[in-house]
Length: 169
Image (tube, rainbow, N blue to C red; front, side, top):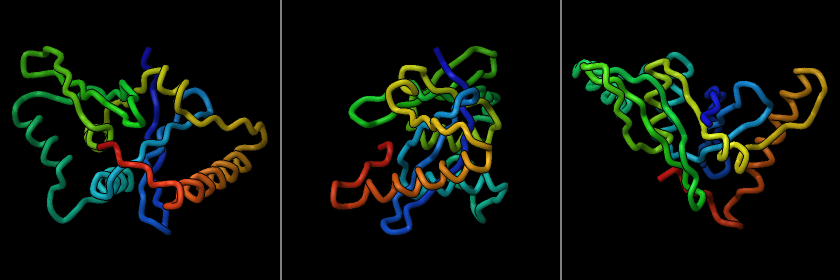
């Protein structure tokens, strides 16, 4: 079953430059962290901040090609987690309104989703297996502070001593 998520933010570890996209379960306080490369994280972050690059990024190019061919993006789904690598599918409707699914890296799919303003989903098995749940029942501001602390601790615990996480290659 696919669970709707929100692209909550893109974060960066200042000590080593690693980037992570944080997807938040639409209904529960659980978060899925997907490690991504620098260009992909920039593409997602720019769009989340309503900013545009001076020249089209890969996700901009892909959206333009899809639009010019008479198709449209309808959704993005993170469908698999295998050996610490996430896999995604981009759902399209072609010019004949037939659904087509394209295999993609989650970072590219998410960058396209935020540009196309379409829903993002994650298979519930992936959330059950890999999501981080906040169990703090305090006020919203306190939850946000705990969340910030958690993300900062996560970056500290994934430093170079134990090996860096790979982007979703």
